[in-house]
Image (tube, rainbow, N blue to C red; front, top):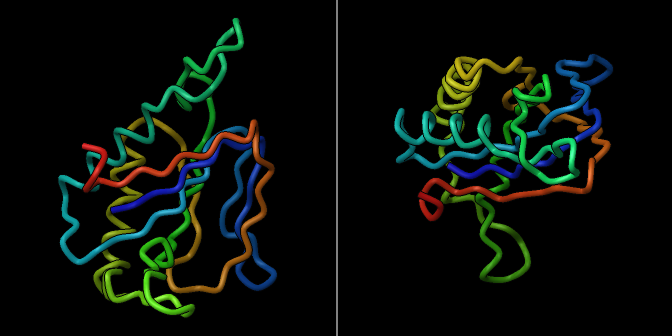
Length: 149
């Protein structure tokens, strides 16, 4: 599992003309999955994201988690995180989980992340989405369950 995390002042995801998820202060998590991802990966990533101390404390140091600042998390499915551009110029997505597997993993991940005590909003799996983000910092991190454990 791979996630790109951005600390935001606000963000929303739209499908067509309909907003499917909107947050103010918090985190946008773009998430992608591989076939081998399972419950342990989902749990580890959910705890990692919810516990990241990337919000400033009263001294201006990144020392607080999203929950400590009453922030929210907007989760957006993004299979292109597993795009391989090592050959040629057109990305290959053979490493990404098949859509039917990835959709189940995404739904499970949203549930597991919600169990961390943070309010969750999400994009729509399989849809063409527009994501509007107002970065805060900017603070952007890439987290991968295979290499970051």
